[in-house]
Length: 195
Image 1: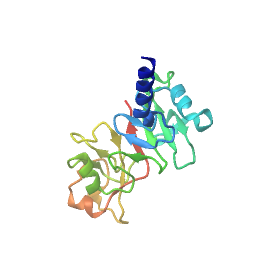
Image 2: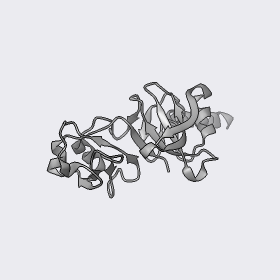
Image 3: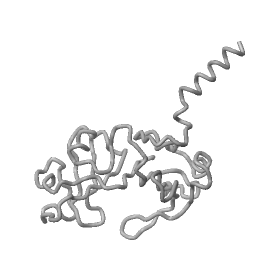
Image 4: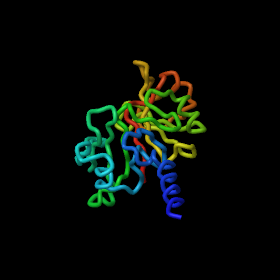
């Protein structure tokens, strides 16, 4: 009986080995960023990745604001910025994870540099993009799509000239021909919601 239990225990460990591998750079939206899962605390993340790789600090936000958070693997291809839940700042529970380093891979193929058309395929439908040239310019609104409430992406135009029609505090359909003409691509930092 002890042998059967030991074999079952070992088999279970192999089945979930990816969940415990600190070198795993996989992002599964709604589930995890590497070993980081919703509800994890600062202490949990530090134990998972090691004290030398983790540093609590204020992180930059929009309009000159800052957020309490942490950096993981700073200045490396695995760099992440972790924002703590603003309603539980003292507990330091993960709220959002900003993907900075290029080593991280989304299981659905999402990545920096993608075009609007490519992101539409992953989302399953067109979405809205905020007008450019202001603090919230280029952010996508995936309402009703597969990416809704999962991730925040910001698009930047690839052309030098941006028509006035695409500038300012407004939402523009990703299917809009004038928007597609400026060839927007996903910028480097992608934020994964862990709420």
